[in-house]
Amino acid sequence: NLKRQHWAGVGIELAIVVLGVFMGMQVSNWNEERRDRALERQYLERLREDIASSMSGAQDGMEKMESQGRKATLMLESLRACRLDEAGRRADFASALYVLGRIEPPMLTRGTIDELRSTGRLGIIRSVRLRQALSNVVQEQERAMEVLGFIVARRSAQIGYVDARSTFLVTQDAGADKKRESDEVLFDFPALCKDPTYINAVSHLRQAAYVVVGQHRRLLVEYQAMLKLLDAELGKRSP
Image (tube, rainbow, N blue to C red; front, side, top):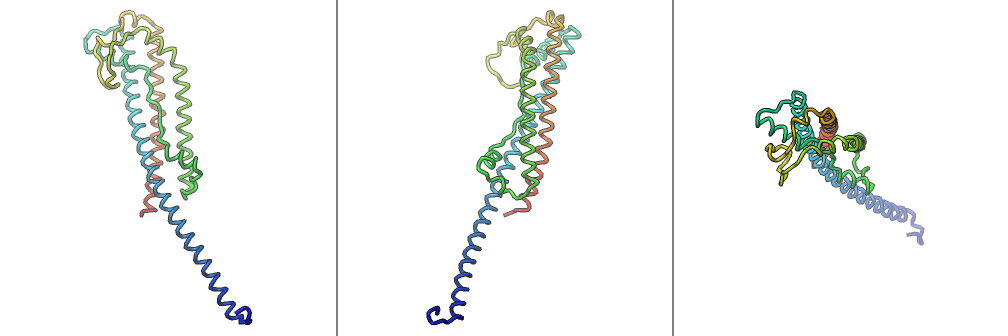
């Protein structure tokens, strides 16, 4: 048509070629967009699993640290009264002493978040609000871990002082909630209740336990808010 100067035919052939290229690009874009949306949903579902796991861990950690705080209060009451008459009270004191100073760190299950960051795929999540929330929750957990490091460093002298005045004969750790018998944790109670440094150390360790409780509680609020955002996004993008 070009040689014969059939311009109408040339125009039609050119239009067919351009339309074919355009349609091919559109199909390619549609396929890529569909793959991205499927991948986005997979990431959203994985993020939801991670946050749900983090919530469970924060709740469990908070309950354990609250239990430790209550047990430390029992220790302080007994020490200040300088009385531990009943066998049950002695076992309670032993149980409290066994877990005193343990830390349940505020954790975040962040495998999916780290994968999104390392692969540069964070932008596949279209919600700007959700991306910002993910960044905020990571920062909040990292700040909590920094505070935890400070607590661990600060309490080392107190836990060392308390441990040096106890003998643990437990052969198997059945968990922090198991009640220890008085013959599993040995201590000289009359001497301890007359030692102000020991009482002061117990009070500091109790205070540290409640600081960690506060960290877990704040993170739990963050995780709950994140879960709502994820549920909303998944609801918008139902398959």
